[in-house]
Amino acid sequence: MAATLIDNIGSLVTNDALHGDLTGVIADAAVVLNGDRIAWVGPRSELDGAGADERIDAGGRTVVPGFVESHSHLVFAGERAEEFAARMAGQRYAAGGIRSTLAATRAASDDALDANVARLTAEYLAQGTTTVEIKSGYGQSVHDEHRSLMAAGRHTAFSTLLAAHVVPPEFAGRADDYVALVIDQMVPACAPLATWIDVFCEQGAFDLDQSRAVLTAGQAAGLGVRVHGNQLHQGPGIQLAVELGAASVDHVCHTDDADIEALAASSTVATLLPAADFSTRNRYPDARRLWDAGVSVALGADCNPGTSYTTSMAFVIALAVRELHLSPDEALWAATAGGARALERDDLGVLRPGALADLVFLDAPSHLHLAYRPGVPLVAAVLKNGVLVSGALR
Image 1 (cartoon, rainbow, N blue to C red):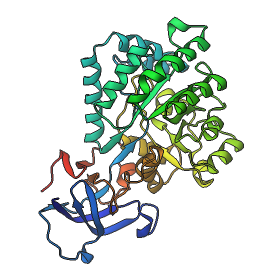
Image 2: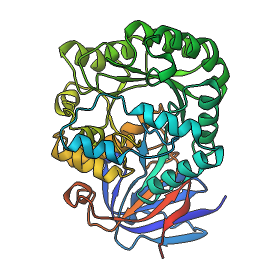
Image 3: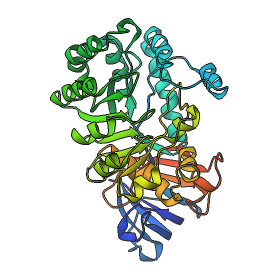
Image 4: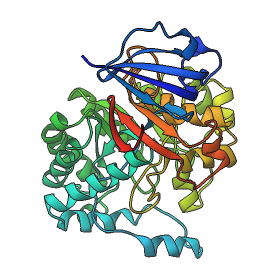
């Protein structure tokens, strides 16, 4: 297997506690890759002089782990710019706009859906996101959820069945009947294409009993659990996620003491999606309190056509620092190692021996510039699985 030496790294973020603090920063660093994995990490002065088949000069740049997006909705057609404009003019977000995307997605061809996923995953990659979870949920028929997961699976190894997104129009007033369809037909048909099952446990979507029924059916089919919970109101989503051992509960904008205590005592990650709160003028989650209580925190962009049409994890990091009161170190960790934890992976979001060789090169003297220079395209190059997939390096 070919060995590659990356040296002349000005500042290397490892997220490895062996190198000190939370982000495990090494100054004047080097990395040795062995194929698609990291073989060695450390100061350049400690290189043992072993030969490498290839050398990459980082040019003094900062190198960070590839961002890990653990919450996205990329299988859709159409857009909802007018809905966004209406919200900015004062209209309240109530999740109903999902139904307009549902109609456009059902009408779109397989090729059109695939092209949209390809476009958005390429956007993510160019901005340093090397891992993306993708949900279904804009089809909401057996056929359309199945083809949505087929489209997702062509672009990621991390797919989630979100058939229980909202109640589709043809089941208006009959939420229990739709839940029965999800359990009896969608889960059996779609489980082989997914890793997780998800539900929007929220007023106007699915209540506690309906959510539990969907999630336990997914578990019985071999799927892990994820939950959209406590986004718009205080509700049972967080407690349900902890009860079922969910990998992640996402949004968590409304929490009480019991919710935070339950999360802190569990392995469930709280995935915060501040770009969605920015776009909907929703309240931001109390990230500072979650973090200080010992809750595992991840950050995601939540790319979707209605409430967070962004693929920029750097923007999310800047929001998390400014609005959620995380430190720049905490925000970067949450967007990398935290996202990996939400996907139940320990070889992503970190730069240490054995981890996947997903590295992002920043035209900046430190990772602090991700929050310090919001909106500036700092990503110079991206390596995924040890291969240069975006940008250029000497």
